[in-house]
Length: 611
Ligand code: M6R
Image 1 (tube, rainbow, N blue to C red):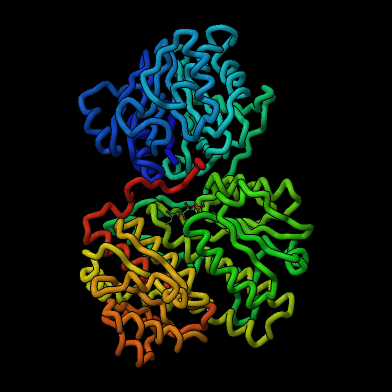
Image 2 (cartoon, rainbow, N blue to C red; image 1 turned 135 degrees about the vertical axis):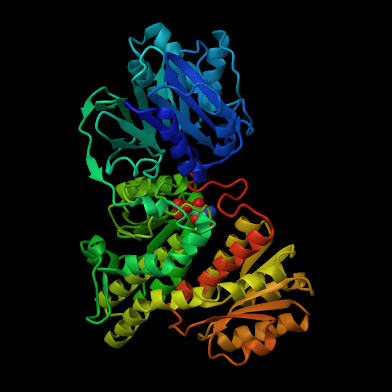
């Protein structure tokens, strides 16, 4: 949450930082602001999106080769101009941006108020900034030292960028819990929450670690820990193309990302799944195969859409590997006193790799001796780095706030993990293993076929756009897909939606059914098919609107449904990765038909880096 950008070098900083903010806007869009150093700090900030800031700045002084910029997802203080970042210190000498939460800000503020500090905003950030300034004035020989002293007293999470009038060619940055990447150019450096504002200029980056301070000048990057010891920057090469973070002719990132899925799923499988030879090569888990096979239990931790991928994996792993699986919301797990036994294995799933609750849950499990397997999309992210081992999903940058291609990438990766373990453990026959490998290899092509129904789905969306509520029902492997379909609709169109196991309908939700309620059935053929057809009949008998996601050769479902979306046949274990695709499109078109901003839904941010 919140995007931060900084530039220090020889070029004009403003256009670089502004463009960077546009790239990071998916991380929060309550307000935006920029501070430029040109003789003195020039500060511009505005409630709303980056475009509003850009309009506001027209005609103003934007000179300078050092600048920091921020796009905000509000935590402390409502979204308005006053609370927008950057903040200026009391003396006006320092400006700072921050991503994270300072938990002990109230006590720090109390002390500062006693020292006659006055505050212009309601933010924890302004408190931290004045706390740093106070130390700087009284006992810090320079800003870097003052920052180091301050951070030792701070409780919470932060990525901060600081500039001062006195040192116009320096940005000082620090992180704990919130991400920071530094791009290395020739006589210039780029700082950002993720690599998307950087990739246009350089592919050489350093991922700053927790408790590190970076002193960044045009020709010099110095990393130190909080003990003032120099750290060697570890330079990595970005594996990302500019095209991956642009809309490439699509109207929205969400639509682009839905349509990218044949390729992104293929990329996830590429070089790993060899269906012909019956081989799954996942170097990340080879070393741990015995440990996983003998694990008394697998615990999956994740949030949101990633949690739905975890729930699907529970069904698949238990069926194929015969290992008990529990799926936990990371936010619950971290605050419980969970029982982790010797040998238990944790699978942590995250698109961004920066979700605060998942990070803390991993740390908690690690303390208790669990082995962590990360299933992560963003290369080099915090979760990828704190996991013992992992499998990247290789879905490419996901910019739309609603997760789409990352989810199908997670499913593909988790399926490969399950099938590999099951094969190694001999809990499925060779024949079944080969069949599942072949079925998985066919997924990209089948997704391509589903996407051809875009116009049909758009028409169904038009008939649902005025609904107030919707119910998504599925059984077995498709129950998590019902949950995911409901989550997509909620976040994109603001229609209230619920996902349920279809059999649970009679235990309550059926009371909602009338002629206005659309009920979306995920009803592709599996062992439950006859039962789900009965559930459809029960909805029809109560005049509900039935929309069915069904297989091409199903002759019964169309007689019960008001609208159908046809899915190519697939093994029931593989079907979830196909069945979710039309639900993503349905939400997208309903959101568009209702005039919603599908790439940046209200109140949301792409990666939830605060609890
Ligand atoms: O980056 P992560 O996968 O850890 O994010 C988890 C959730 O915040 C995320 O899936 C969220 O639910 C999305 N908005 C879903 O579309």
